[in-house]
Structures are given as C-alpha cells and as structure tokens.
Length: 145
View (cartoon, rainbow, N blue to C red):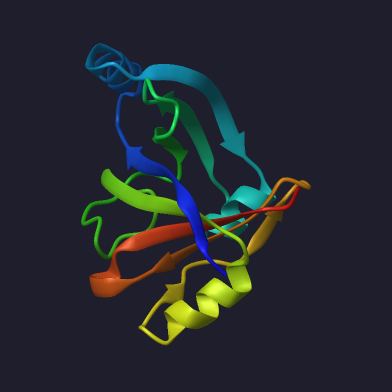
C-alpha cells in the first residue's frame, strides 16, 4: 500500500494562545480549537487519562497543518526524543496511509515500535503512534470512509 500524504506535525506548547498568535502572524490560519480527553485518546497516545487543549493551524494552501497542544493532564516532561507524547517541543509527524497494519508490519522490520495501541476513533480513523529511528515519534492515520 502507498503512503497517501503527511497529515500534520504536532507541537506541544505551554501557552496555546501565544502559539496560535505566533503561527497566525506567520501566516497560518486557525482551523479549529478543542479539548481532547477520553479513554480512546489515552489508548492511542499510551498516556492513559489525559486532558489536552488542541488548536489545528492550516497553511494558506490548505495542504499542511500544525497541531498545537497544551497538556492539562498529565504534566509535561522533557527530552522529546525519548519522552512520552506530552513532552514540550517536537511531538511527531503524522502520516496518512491506506492500511495501518500493513505499514506497521513493514516499519517493524526497520525497528519501529508501537507506543500505545492502534485505536479506532469513531468511524473516521484508525490511529497509532510509534517510535522510529533514534526513538523519534511518528503517527499513522488510516481513514475509514
């Protein structure tokens, strides 16, 4: 199966409002802002009980996005290369693929390790996080429609 596109890049910040203002000034548009919590979210990230404020910023061409997050629970941590997904700084790059299972099978041969679980979000996506080269964090999304 072929890789379809890069979906978004996630960045964990302390002050979501300031980050939104910064990226608006840069030229990105605020696509939406929401609070994310619930059992499904903790299963995909491997963090368990979590509460996150999220803002999705879109590039002017509409093809690329930044997902800005502020973790209210659990507290943030340090080194983004080996830390869980609530570390400040680089979070992960998310790729949309045709088939998560097939893609993970191929990537495991190159050292990829699943962080939490592959989970289903409503009837919209299957999602997972995994660590790749040097422990860097990536995500996969499979559209279900």
